[in-house]
Length: 459
Image 1 (cartoon, helix red, strand yellow):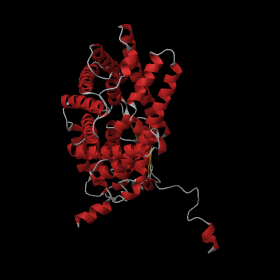
Image 2 (tube, rainbow, N blue to C red; image 1 turned 45 degrees about the vertical axis):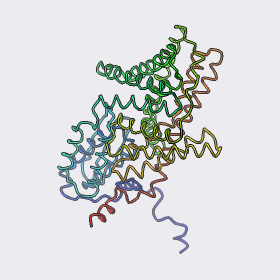
Image 3 (spheres, rainbow, N blue to C red; image 1 turned 30 degrees about the horizontal axis):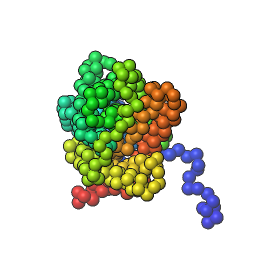
Image 4 (cartoon, rainbow, N blue to C red; image 1 turned 45 degrees about the horizontal axis):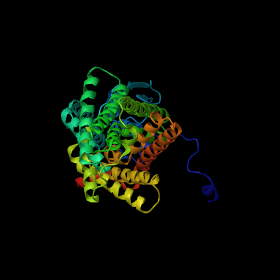
């Protein structure tokens, strides 16, 4: 009895089965389909790589890709595998004892906004884990997912970006004219970005040109004496351009033990942030050269609207950004509801006097928590719900003020640096809060997506 109290059940250096990585994920306890394991090992590995490439291209995090690979290979009878994910490459090694190992690798070189496709891949992996889909049918379904058109055409996604900018500017307190100018500038950003993408211009320059365009449009209408707040219009454009999904995925990868992948995504997000800052700075300097009175750009709009109106504006903005991210149609309203819940908690924290720095992080935790529950119930990963819902918490106005202090107001450049650092801290806190909420929700989502709950419902 004394030996049992002081001795562990297994040696401390014993290797952990890779299937144990599925604990806490929607693919726990996969149903193994044991038929022709060795003969079809290479086919299974190639299919797992196809799944991983598709998920990476559609914006999934490294942990979700890894668990999907492990779940698929385990369901098809391959348990002696190891997975290594490094930034944009995926390597799978199958080394069954007393056999020649098989190692396959895939590099992901392209990305696209397609949360609907990511949800469909999530459903496919869940069906494979439940034992209801064979290898041949799974390949056909994956081919159908990758060849299926996106839910919304390109023109509708660009128009939804304009709706988002207008709604979020009004949500921040801008006048009707500010909302209209924000919509027009974002529509132009989308059209110009579409044309530049056809010319194979890097995303860094496309983002910088879009930020400059939003700034120039705001200052131009301000110079024409249109009653609006240029700072709010520019903040709306910044919120549209911020790489929210990349930041959340990078934070999730860093926390879950993928430092190399997280570093690559953080670097990519940093360059996007730098492109936004450069574009806004060029627009502000251009305004100074044309004689626009820049100290007056911080004049506020007509003031905040009634709370019900602000809530409706937030829901419209969230559904619009979901359309730009190509989310499934039936996910628009639930995602907007999660964003509304985050707003209520955010305002409650502010009302309680806890602090405006803590409030966005707390709101992000609630959004991450509800995003996992709602996402899994709707057959989608948490990222699909959390990223659009958390967007209103980002400090777009603080970013603009800091860029202004850094580039135009030469008397206090250090204030601009401190402001940018503070804004980045809040952005990372929001991303970390969304990941924390996801982990806090895991005990409440053990049955969602698992084969036990599916079999119980079938009975």
